[in-house]
Picture (tube, rainbow, N blue to C red):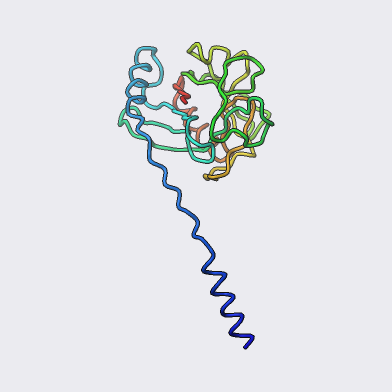
Length: 199
């Protein structure tokens, strides 16, 4: 009799379990951005082989840092990347679905716009490497003043964590240590690359 009860309880328990819904994200079309980036790098004498597009409109638990091959107009790599916390707590994931945007000093927000990836420096974070980002638009003109750089951070994972978010910093685009090793090699081989942050 006890076996029957256990069996019935097990069947009842299993029937109440819902399948975890599969994440279905409709891929975004960045064709117009790639086309504009191609024209921009030619006009401004920047690297014409590769460029980086970061889409902060994408949930922070998903890969949204994209490396594009401008010659073939194809995406070659995708990485996780953080955004600024704004008024939220540093290193939390409070704004994973709506990254706060600002160009103001001490705002702790991300800034949208086109950047030129400049000199390689030493970071206190991650693998101790960073790249200076020079803002080229009104929306990111304070990047150097705000010490906005591309760097890695131990809190960032290399894999997607949706529906969770990625820890938020003070406005720098930060990637995982593993990702930064790849990106560092890319940037060493491709000077004066365009990074375009959109939302």
